[in-house]
Image (cartoon, rainbow, N blue to C red):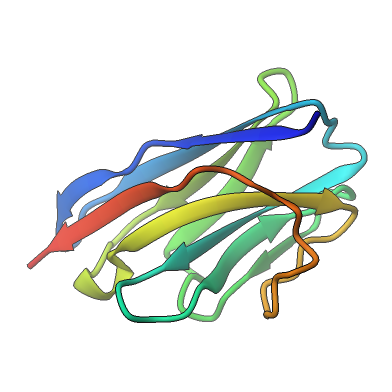
Length: 124
């Protein structure tokens, strides 16, 4: 069974940094891509970044230059390094897995495996 465990959220001030972790079990990164998504209160879920089975990465425009996605094959963990955080980055962040590619544009019904979410709060 494929399972994802997201962690690393917290409260930071504007301009601060956080590193989110998505620990995966029951899959290998050779076969699966992992994506990060976020949902702010009252807003739809949106894609943040993904790292795919071939090692390629995708980023939402707002994430480019501030966020970096990476993976540790030994730890079976994907990380989302977030720098220069802004209040508009406040959201619950989720990771999700799919074979091959994880696309950032919705709908996301094709993604069957999700982590539980981790809250990021950026205060001004």
